[in-house]
Length: 88
View 1 (cartoon, rainbow, N blue to C red):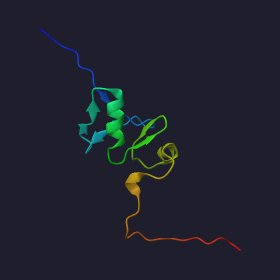
View 2 (view 1 turned 180 degrees about the horizontal axis):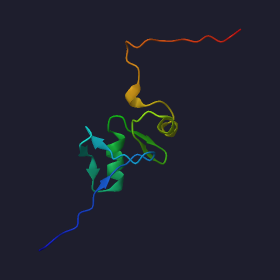
View 3 (view 1 turned 135 degrees about the vertical axis):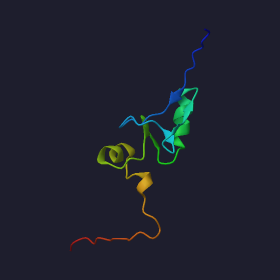
View 4 (view 1 turned 90 degrees about the horizontal axis):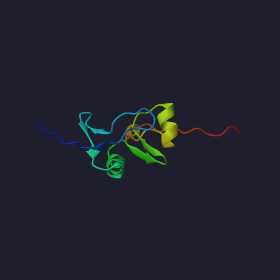
């Protein structure tokens, strides 16, 4: 039987190793490492940071790697606003 080898790349989160997928069932893959990273950087919830990609999970490790809160958990326009004043 004849076979051929095919190599493809799937970007993963540098914090937890989660595969970059679309709707949690279709892997976003490409034929080069750079193209897979670019595709993941454009996927909803994924953030490209220096040193790799971070998925949209919101926990202290992901938020620290991302440099802020999860892009998936941003408050909407109808969210309550809370303001704290400095003590005098």
